[in-house]
Image 1: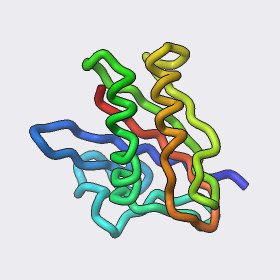
Image 2 (image 1 turned 120 degrees about the horizontal axis):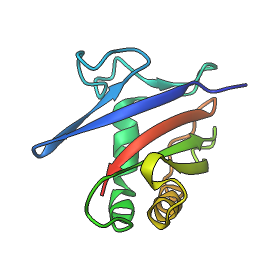
Image 3 (image 1 turned 180 degrees about the horizontal axis):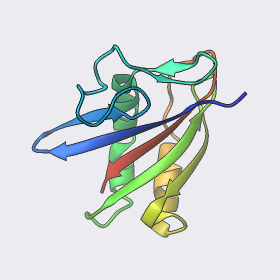
Image 4 (image 1 turned 90 degrees about the vertical axis):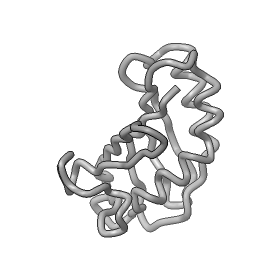
Length: 127
């Protein structure tokens, strides 16, 4: 079974940030951190954007330590039903680089709550 790919976009403005879910709302709508929208697979697995952000915050410092202080590293990862990360891939400008590989290793340490289906997420980290 394939899980739907959810892309979260983090807007870094001032001291706050908000997530956007492109599958159910456009960039002009309310932040996806609102519990009314969820990161969801086609067969029932889901996490709210707020959950995704909170979990990614647990590895944010490790990812940030991978970079040189500039840019954004985007990682695409798959969460198993158990909440463990099955795979991580740095994409875009950091794909195949030392920074990308470091970010991949850091994200592998994240743990989500168990759910009933795998979920695929793309997530950006500000370096």
